[in-house]
Length: 253
Image (cartoon, rainbow, N blue to C red; front, top):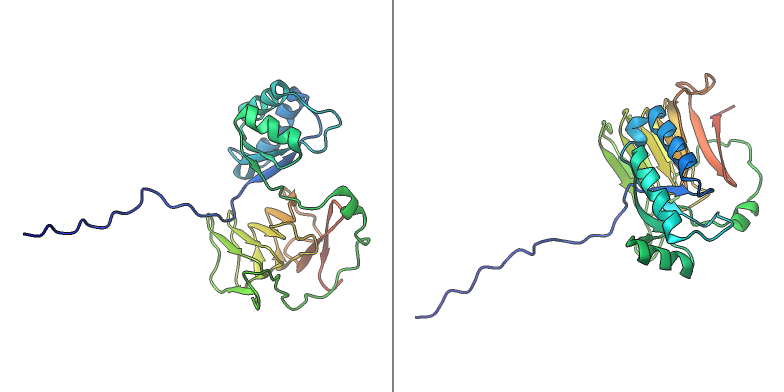
């Protein structure tokens, strides 16, 4: 009698690489008390955005190389304040050594642009009309076109367009998130978060027909809106990046 073949066994897990909501904290001081106070202030101003948010520490702006003990104290201060530091931004061999000593991973930086390249960017140009969606192409997406989304994006939902623009033809609700490696176009109300240039594309822009955003980010540079400027509330708006600064203006003005 022949034995029945064993049933195929499902693997215990599956690994996938994709976009992760990981904020970058560019550390400019090793004063743990000052960082702790600032994190607490950020969380108090926007708890839905910052509380228990995973963050990656970028140590590249520090003038002096920190010790593992200093970084450990900083990590503890951030954690006690309410954020969750989980990684160091990829840097030089010193950063790699710190990461190994602290048992932390290193990840690619959210902003893939140096100070020198930022300074070489042209000055902020006058707002232009909404352009046709221009897809960002790579070896995996030759011929890609903008990703269209025709349903409202509701609280807790995220829509991501990889290597291309994202066009939302309806609304983005409070607590929702729309993200693209290219530009983000919202032909309705933007009440949630919009993140363009998610992989560091500094020429990406955010466009919307009715501006009530919680947060806007371009290539990792972001602004949280606790109070929206009166001239932008509910108006057609575009956002763009010039150097290290985000700019906002009404469309057609």
